[in-house]
Length: 184
Image (cartoon, rainbow, N blue to C red; front, side, top):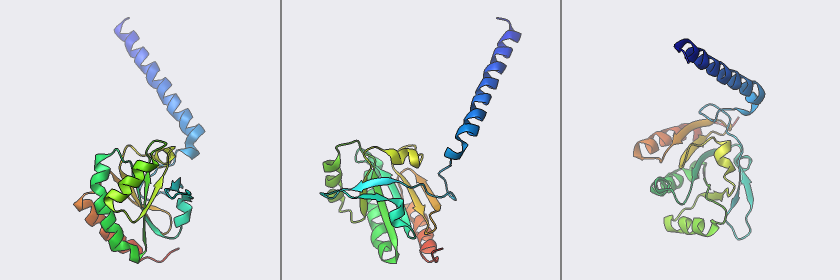
């Protein structure tokens, strides 16, 4: 193949790819909502780890400030951040913070998740999404990921990776601010 033929082939591939992207955006555009700061938080559905599991969703926390953490028992960074999350919850629960940690562990992991909760003395809401649909709904790239959701249901902060001391200080400042806001 000549050099000109190679460039024509590359141009044709680029045009086909661009047409595919354009068609996808036109066809699926309404479903391609970005999950980022400033966007409305997608709803999720998960269950409690009670002996009789109860369904929970973001709608159950409507009008409240929520720190949503998506995690798994097999995730070492998730383990490292749990004590910090528990401390954040203890410091802010009385001010109105709801901390909701949704495990995306595989089906059948209820026992190990309960053991994890006991090992770390977690007192906030821990839910279980065995289907892992929350990963799609929140477009996560891994675990852990955390989102601070305002009383208005809008994402105010997004953390990809474990929360460290510097991140916690930033989250505390944000929580002080949005917990003081009036609900819309």
